[in-house]
Image (cartoon, rainbow, N blue to C red; front, side, top):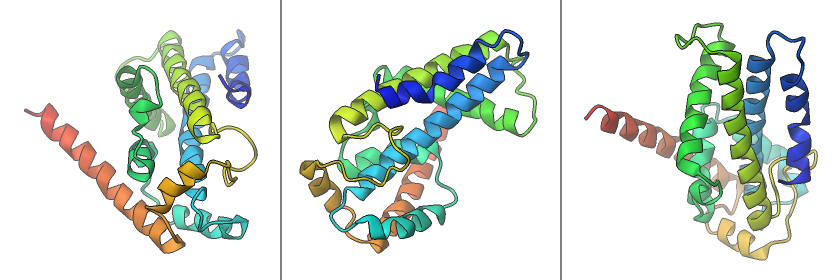
Length: 207
């Protein structure tokens, strides 16, 4: 576990261990999921910034380009690694299949909870904390693997727009992204690929 990842979950531990709180389950679960979504986005944007074409002067434009893609979510960034550098996220997260299913389950509950809807599953505090355990396990595994392979864990520092000093990564990223325009095109393509994967899973489940 990287130190910055440990620090990111310290507040989650405080919430979990607050015996006086009647909402520690949903609060810890929600914050952990927010941590995971921020982490995967930051690892992705850090990888993009390894492109030789980008320097600090390009950061605002890089941020604006991503912000314009308003329908990019966690599932899109999950497929981004393989598209960008040829490494599937399944190679970065231990126990990937189980944890990936749990992340999808967590997202489903989060969407309903955040909109004040009933989940229909009578979520107990213990069940929510069990989900938080697996969200945390996902983050810890991704942080360790990303830090080892890319030099950045998704939690360290105040910004993900830093150079990691790994020319082998820059060389790979350069093949896909060589300008702001190419970055925008990559994001548009990524959005479409994730949507097709989701549709394919739905079709298979109906067979």
